Image (cartoon, rainbow, N blue to C red; front, side, top):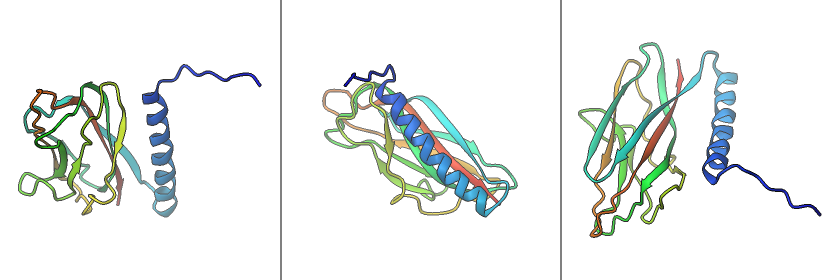
Amino acid sequence: MPRVTTTESFQERALTAVEAVNTAVLSLAQGEQAGAYAATYSFVGADWGATFTEIFNTPSDKRGALLSMDLYQITEEFSGDSTAATVQVGTAADADAYATAVSIPDTTAVAAALNLVVTAGAVAIIPAGSAVTVTGTISVDAGAKEGIGTLSLTVLYFT
């Protein structure tokens, strides 16, 4: 039997799998409600060496739900031996209104790609016309390897 080889990296295969899941969920939503769509917001070089906040605005005519949260293009491993890195999604007044402290596993290595578990952390529908804050809480490591990577959030919008 011939051996099949692939030139796709683990990251490409993982992101393709996530895209397939997102497409299936989006298809289901579109079947239930015309006009539903997904949008992905990416924060390149997010650094958990300090707490950071990024903001994006939702459409004025659509509500949203956090569909997935992905971390890839990791250039510094996560080794939070004192405090683990987390991500919260919310508002300026309530940092975890839409997703509560989603943890990034310690020992997440350079060049890894992972889909962060948000199903347990997703807590509310995002209102139309909102300013959404994404907060990365500091990871503390004695060896100064707190973690740097690209963080992407995919939001499913609907009426």
